[in-house]
Amino acid sequence: MVTSRPEPQTTDNELTNGIPLFLDQLIDTLTIEQSSDPERSEFVSGLPGGGSNSEVGEMAALHGRYLLAQGFTLEQVVRDYGAVCQAVTNLAVETGAPIEVEEFRTFNRCLDNAIAGAVTEYSVRQTAAATADNFQALNSRLGSLAHELRNHLHIATHAISAIKSGNVGLSGATGAVLDRSLLGMRSLVDRSLAEVRVTAGLPPRFETIVLAEFLADAAAAAALDPRARECQFTVMPIDSGIAVYADSEMLSSAIGNLLQNAFKFTKRHSEVRLHTHVVADRVLIEVEDHCGGLPAGAAETLLLPFVQSGEDRSGLGLGLDICRRSVEANHGVLRILDLPGSGCIFIVDLPRPSVSQLAVGRRRRATDSA
View 1 (cartoon, rainbow, N blue to C red):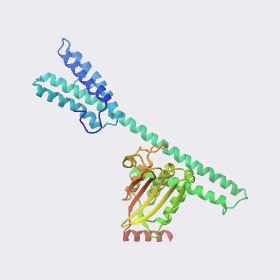
View 2: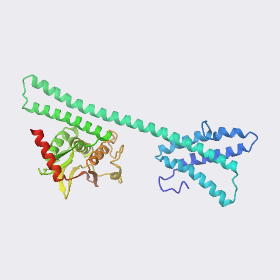
View 3: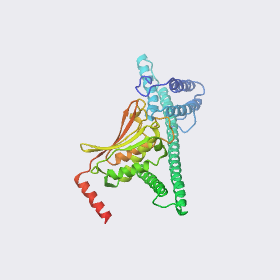
View 4: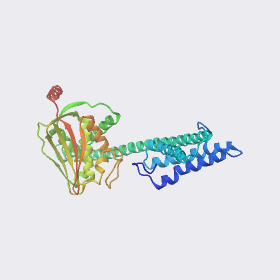
C-alpha cells in the first residue's frame, strides 16, 4: 500500500527502517501480553494515552525525523501508520483470522503511541529547521546589506575627503562618484524597507508611477553593482506615457532584485537588458539575461523561497520570492520565460492604470510640487 502511492516515491530506506520495525514491535507486544508477565509489554508499546518512553515511541520518532528529512509531509507520516491498520484488518478479513478485542485494543494502543511519537518528532524538527532557516536568511540578508552599504560609504567617504581638500569640485568626476554612492545607499535602504513591508504583509501605498523616470533611477542604482561592470547593461527607451498604479517602494525593490539577480547569473561579457512595453491593458517590465537557460523544471519552482538553480549559491534564494510577493501585492504577476541555450526573461506583468487612477496621480504630483 505504501509503495503504491503516487508521490513521493517510496525509498528502500523507508521500507526497511519505518513500518517493518513497528510491525516487529507490535508482534513483541502481543507475544509478551500472552506471557506470564504481560505488564512488560508497556516497555515496548507504551501506556494507553502515551506519557512514557517506549520502543514503539522511540522508533516512531526516528521514523518521523527521517520522513521530514526526505521531504515527506505530515499527512504522509500519519498515512504510513494508517496503511498498517488498513492492511492488517484487510488481511484478517481475507484470511478469516479473527482479531480478539484485547488484541485489537493493543493494536490501537501501539498505533496511537507510534503516530504520537512520529508526529511529535516531525513537528519539533520541522519547527527547529524553519527557525534555523529564518535566522540564516536574516543573517545572510543583513550581512549582504551591511557589506553593500559599507562599500558605498567607503567610496563616498573618500570622495568627500578629496572634495574637502580643495583639489576637486562637486561638479566634476569626484562629485559624480559621490552622487552615485549616495544613490546606491538610498536604493539599498529603500529596497530593504520594501522587503520588510512585504514580509510583514503590510498593504501597498498605491500611486501613479511614470515608468520612464522611475526605471531610469532603478537602472542607475542597479548599475552600481560591481557585477554590472562585467556585462553590457542596456535600458531600452521607454515611452513617456507608460505608467502603472503601484507602490513605488515595492516595485523598486522587485526591479532592483531582478536586475541584481540578472547581473549575478548572466555570463561574463554578455548582456542584461531592461525593456518595458504595453500589451493591451497590461504593462510588461522585462529583465533579460544570458545565463544559458534554466535547468528542466526550474521555471516552475524558482519563485519559491529557498530555491536556487545556479552554481552561485551565495544568499538564501529569497530574492525572487520577495519579488513575486511585491509584484502580487500590486495586483501583478511575475513570470519567467526560459530561453534554452541563451538565458531567461523575468516579466513583471502589471495592469495599466485606469483614468481615475491617473487623475489621482496627477493631483498628488501637483500637491507635492506646490
